[in-house]
Length: 370
Image (cartoon, rainbow, N blue to C red; front, side, top):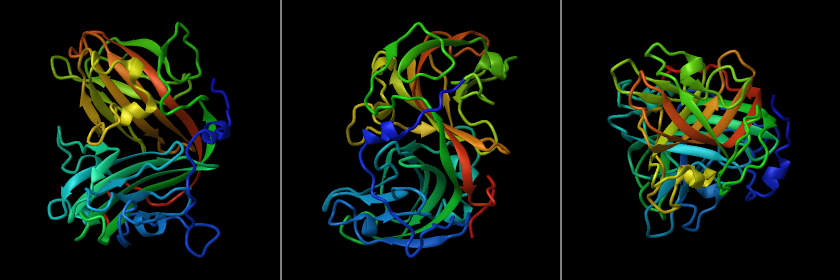
C-alpha cells in the first residue's frame, strides 16, 4: 500500500516559485477548452523581461506560469514549461503554422498529428521559439497545495525569434485538471542518484534500482500481467507496456486509455547512459547542456542494452485519482524479440498521487479548436 506523505518537506528544498494570480480575481476561473485565445509576450524573460511581460498563465491555479518566453538579448530564444519546485513539462514543435494550423491541433493530434506509425510528436524540456510555428505543451505543475495538469497548443506570429521584440501567439487549452495532493513517495531530489537494492516493497521507493522481466510482448500472446509493469501494486493499469506483434518490431508504450498522457525518451546505450546516473534532472537533459534535451514520444522502439526515461501523467476516465510518475529503465538482452523475455532494471524518480479537485469540462481527444 502507499504511504501518505506530505510534500511540504520536498518543496522546502526546491527553488521557490513566483505566484501568478488571475487578474482581478481571488478564485481563478478554469480555462475553456478548445477555444482559441490570443496573448503577447512583450519581450523574452532574460532580455529585460518579467513574469508579467514574458509568460502565459492559463488559469491561475498554479503557483508558476504555464509557459515562458525566454532568452538573453541577442541570443536564441526558446519556450519552456518548467520553472521551479517539482514542475515537469515538455514541449513539441509540431511544424509550420501552415502545415499544422492551431484549429486542427486536438488533444490527440498534439501527440501524433497525422495519426501515423512513426509520426509521434517529439517533446523536449525546451523548444526553440520560431515565428509562424505551432507547438504542443504538456505540463504538470505541483509546487503547492494543488497540482495542475494541462495540455495546450500555441501558434506563433511574427517576431518570436527575437528576444527584444514582442511575440504574439494564439493558443488553445486542450485539457486542464486541478488536483489536490495525495500520497507521494518521499525523498524526491532532482539530482539524487540511483542505488541498488534487494528489497521488493509495495511502496514505490525513489532512486532504488530494481529488476523486472517482460515474458513476451502484449500483442504476441501477452497481457498486462506478463507484458506490463506497474510502479505500485494498487495501480489500475501498468505504467509501462512492452508491445509488438510476433515477428515484428517491439516497442515501449506509456499511454493506454482515458485521459492518460505521457512520453518516453530513448536516452542512448546503457554503457553511455547507465541507470545509476539517470537522476530526475538527467532524465530531461542527461549532460545538462544547451541542445541536450531528451526527446519524449508516445511510443519508442524497444532495444536491448538501452536506457530510457518515462514521464507518465495517468488519469483514467471515470477515476477521481491520478498519478504522475517519472522513472528510468535500462534494458538487458532480448528486447527486440516479441516472443522472448525482455529483462531490465528500473528506478522510480518521482511518484505522486493526486485527487481530482476540478477540471475544465468537455475534454475530448478529437475535439478541434475554434
